[in-house]
Image (cartoon, rainbow, N blue to C red; front, side, top):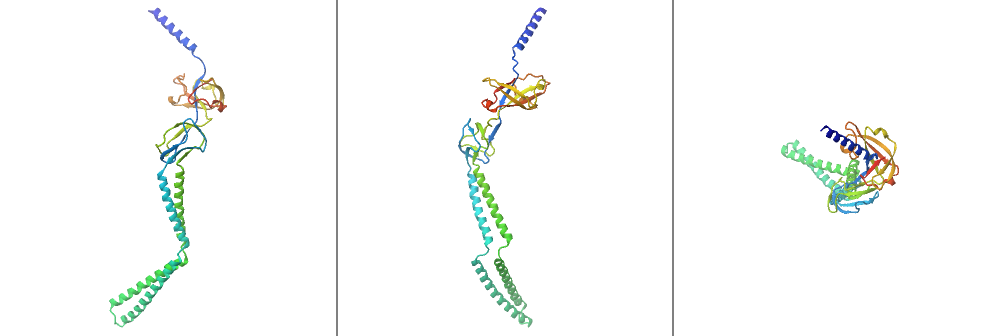
Length: 318
């Protein structure tokens, strides 16, 4: 039995040695990455047209899609009406009263002046009669009230005519102009929102996915187009603490793609610790559980040479 156990142990040891000898020492395996960018509409609307396709390269300023935003069209109509009304009020305040309004006020003043003169004469007669006890207090109070009413109406029309002849107060003019500016701002805001019915590329991009199709509803802020920034390729490698001393920020390293046998160089731009196992790039990393794990980010020396590499394609850090 002991002999069989020794034979089994020897066979297992030889197998492990053989496996270790056959394991290629090619360096650390990493992944190809690119900077990701998304384009979203600023307003909610239904997609009328999509002018690009997945895999297409777009330039800054290219129109990607067109939305239907009927609510914004209604707001523009409302803002135009409010702007026209506010401008008319401002112009009316600047111009003041018209000639016809002046004639109406003067005619009103003339009529009230005659009523006041008649009420004044009646009051003077009533006062003398009341002094001589020829009029009852009730009748005297009625005449006096009519006199006071005629005087108040005449004072009011005189003040109104004086204000019109003097011109509109600057406070009213400023208030009317402020309302006009506010209405104009609302119109500009509506026009800006209406122009946002077009989804425009803000920078160059290689479109990877288009989230919605023609006829579907696109909400404001929803990522409608996703893709990669051209010539933004970089590489991520996962290296354990026991071997990270070989690499330093700013160091130039050599790499090789797992397909096409493309060899290229790059520069280490950052080294940071990974706190989550899910962030590890290298498949089945060889490290001890107590070791810290670090991510090494490498930027290629010649971006045009690595532009054809697919995202998440494996590369080896030699």
